[in-house]
Length: 516
Image 1 (tube, rainbow, N blue to C red):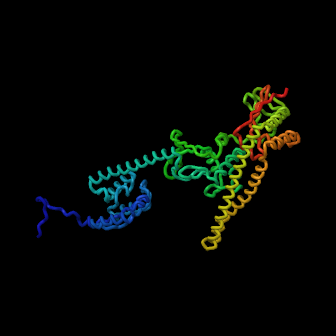
Image 2 (cartoon, rainbow, N blue to C red):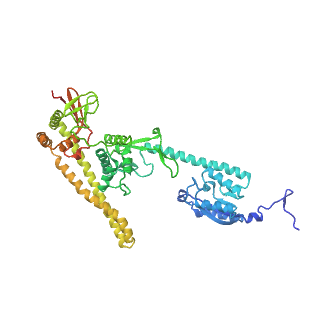
Image 3 (cartoon, helix red, strand yellow):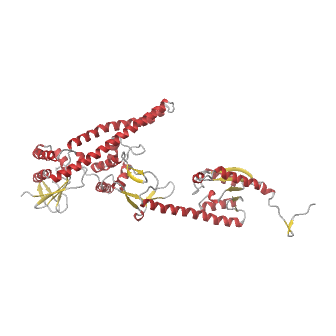
């Protein structure tokens, strides 16, 4: 009988028993897309694990491939489920992976893996950290390294969070799409020439109508669509109205996720980062629209159209609105009983109207405002024409695919019908808008001609129908304040048509003595 091998008088135990040599193992492959970009391919990690298993004389039963899967959580992945089933059934008694971060980067999940393998008398083998959980030292070292992996992940998250605030403060992109109406250009947010006119129109429509669904319907009927080609909804209109980017103040770092598949909530305002951008609408228009939204949220519905000429804009000097009772031809303040006859207030208003038009400074400012409105309409028209060109190109592309037998007739019809509908809407809207542009361009005449028109309006006022008078009042009057001895008017710039009603940036303040 051959002698037993000894070292220092002690018997040398073989490094591998027959049971170990026939150990059944699996190989775990999880390489992130970022690592793959650096050259760490899944094939490389698999070859490394196979060489180790061959050196140990182990049998490879299966490869669990999670290439490109995030290590934040892997427990719900189908490959993880298959691996756990194989461990529980005894089909494998060990799992080889290149390093701990490849198994999972969440400490809780790493420890859960270790406990699961221990319960089923299976081992975890991490090649880079030289960890074998079959030994107490290996289990201790595994726990320590797992904690370090989690710490590393949290450090990365902290660095990313810090960089978010820095980039947001600098006004740079944090990822994701730009708000509707804007685009990213050289890492800066700038108005999009196609979307910005539509975004501005949205605010103007809401100020005129005060109803989210009405604004959505009008936008859709005019052929406008969201960036992804969907129709506008009241939810989309509300979101765009509330976004302050349009008035030149971009919010960043103001929301956070409650977890995968859960809602996003707003952070405390102290964490918000506001950076200036080029505005699409005035701050006054944005705030006016959002004040209307708050009134709606408080249960106040848009008011019904007034019957009398100055109802809704006639105020007493005490601050209360004045109304016309059914049994009196006067505007009355129910608080302090201040009153004025309807005819007297109308006469004073017409005189103020004439004074406004005969003021050269006011006429000059009106012309500048008219130029601005005309330019806005022209940009909106250009946006629609660009959209019509894009729709036609998309329809042509679909038709070519159909001719090439790449689309069935059913598929072609399903995709082409929405485009046909939208093309019809845009095609119908363009001449209407073109007519407005032509009309505004013709109406944008010299100061002398405007003064002449004003004189004519003053002379023809008695013959105007009551509906036309009310429309003119709604167009140019912001507020009338009536005191015991005088009447003050806040007039907007008088536009040529109802399309010029949007501007309230400046007011003409006029005051007249009350008729005795």
